[in-house]
Image (cartoon, rainbow, N blue to C red; front, top):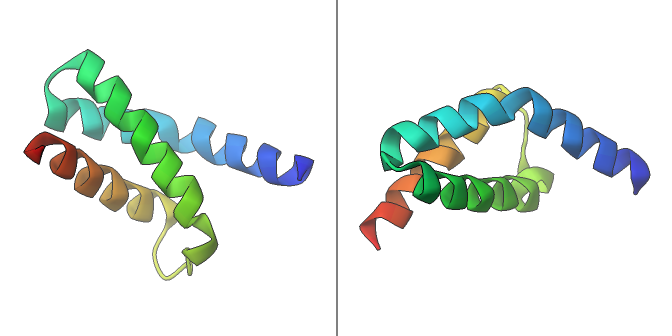
Length: 75
């Protein structure tokens, strides 16, 4: 489990700036973007076992961030 947590932290540290940037750009509000970004990372980590590696992780995470942000803005 400790290795899993380290791996997830490494993914987050590497990709959080890009994910946060796309969420901020789409949300247009820093507070809202922070809430959505947290939801995005929860979804990414839950979906991680299904990541097949057919695309780069950053591309996959970006698509989740865009979809989750647009869904949140529709509510």
